[in-house]
View 1 (spheres, rainbow, N blue to C red):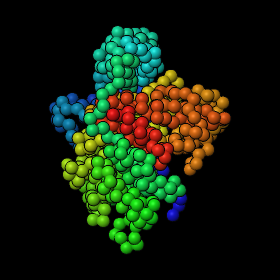
View 2: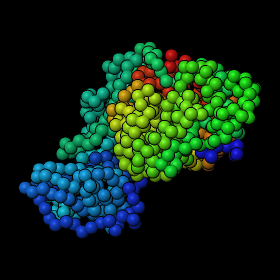
View 3: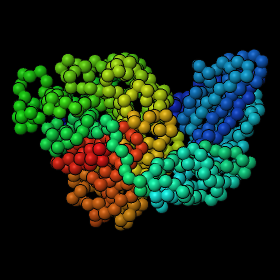
View 4: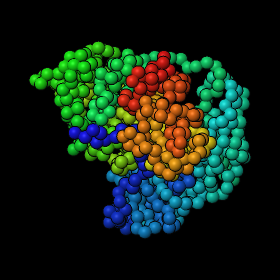
Amino acid sequence: MSTQAPTRRAGFRHRAAAGLTALILPLAAMVGLATPAEAATSATATYTKTQDWGTGFGASWTVKNTGTTTINSWTVEWDYPAGTSVTSAWDATVTSSGNHWTAKNVGWNGTLAPGASVSFGYNGAGPGAPSGCKINGAACDGTSQPGDNAPSAPGTPVASDITDTSVKLTWTAATDDKGIKNYDVKRDGTTVATVTGLTYTNTGLTAGTDYNYTVVARDTIDQTGPASGATPVRTTGGGGGQPLPNAVKMGYFTNWGVYGRNYHVKNIVTSGSASKITHINYAFGNVTGGKCTIGDAYADYDKAYTADQSVDGVADTWDQPLRGNFNQLRKLKKAYPNIKILWSFGGWTWSGGFGQAVQNPAAFAQSCYDLIEDPRWADVFDGIDLDWEYPNACGLSCDTSGAASFKNMMQAMRAKFGPNYLVTAAVTADASAGGKIDAADYAGAAQYMNWFNVMTYDFFGAWAAQGPTAPHSPLTSYAGIPQAGFNSAEAIAKFKAKGVPANKLLLGIGFYGRGWTGVTQAAPGGTATGPAPGTYEQGIEDYKVLKTSCPATGTIAGTAYAKCGSNWWSYDTPATVNSKMSWAKNQGLGGAFFWEFSGDTSNGELVGAINTGLN
């Protein structure tokens, strides 16, 4: 057996953090699907540009039956200039031949009664606008013609100079084919100012109070565009948040940690962490062949523990029916009956199997149930955690199963496991416009789930070898952040805005740092030559190592950073964890989780900070 896990943590996102979106099918494979435009019918097609994030955009077409007879199918065609393309689409089959694009209805939305309409949408890349539109072979004749576009969304506002009663907001400009006239600044959905510039200071606020800000652009013909990303702000003063009732304090335990890391279930006890947590996610089971399967049989249920390694000081025997981590977890639950244990499936390396599994959600749920309820260890687990990176988006590989696939999976899991079993998931924290949070129906899934583990870490790292250096787990945005929407506050705000209850959201904490080498600038934003050396992997190191090898020298956006020689690291400390827990309480979240136990000190400093901060 290797001394290192075959799969790194789901949270270790690598290049997936860039928020890429894949084509529904390779274009070369789809060209043959295109058919000639249907005969002209009485219909219109109207184009709307819904979002613009600089390197790409969101758009939709609305098809309306303006005739007196039913339309049984529709085809919309248009041309894009070279350099502009569709990258993903929904509610239509979109194909291309050169710069000519064709969208055909899918099975459920082709029939339109007189007066009825239907829309389909897509994400695109490039700066061009569509031209030469046809609907079923005739001119589109929609009321809004391509080119008469609403403004794009302004950049997510950055909050600074926060006091007890005021906050300064700054954002980047929106774009529009007719020019931008002004911006509406909205606080909790209500316009508080209209300004012509790119900054506004909101005064007269209440100390110790949470606010949420967005900005909307208006063009010179008074069209308004989509709102910017949301920026949560809490004014200073006013005291801390109230303790969260029944707050979740959950940590991941990795089955491969028993090898090179020499971290065992007993360490959760000896570190003092067992009395400070409420849940453990055991990582990982595999997802392959449409089923939940064992991840590492030896570590999971076969490894024999000596008396000194065992939670209760009793050695395993050669003929006992269950050994390994599962038996140690059973012993832990006996000693600490308040702890609930979930079996987590997937993770970064094993997420590729979900796409096949959700083709038959009921069969997938049955396979997971059969494995977790195996009589040898059925008493060990209280729940299931699905760690899919990422539904209908790209991680290690790209998934195109559709926006509803995640919801369908969670619905099937709840139906199979029943109301008393914990059903959870680790989910993306990519709050960028058109990013991974937008790719799946997380709000629809929430009704079937106990909570979401929002992976609010790995936003930035040395996969961008030349930098800029940036905190991998920023709580908030800050001036100079490399990617808008890549911070905890915006991720939580976006999930809330989509309808996920705050008490079903857990804030994620990484018990490790990410770092670069070849850095000369102490403050964030410096250039680098590559990843800093790490014990197990370049560019990453445990907190227990960094706290002494490279002590923190500053904080940015609620996360510590440090420069030692030519190496630059960002990581959370007990102090920053405590402040993040205060923020979580103020947001009314369900609690917090962390990746993973073995990164903490031998006396559980970070687990202690989570426990103290949530109390």
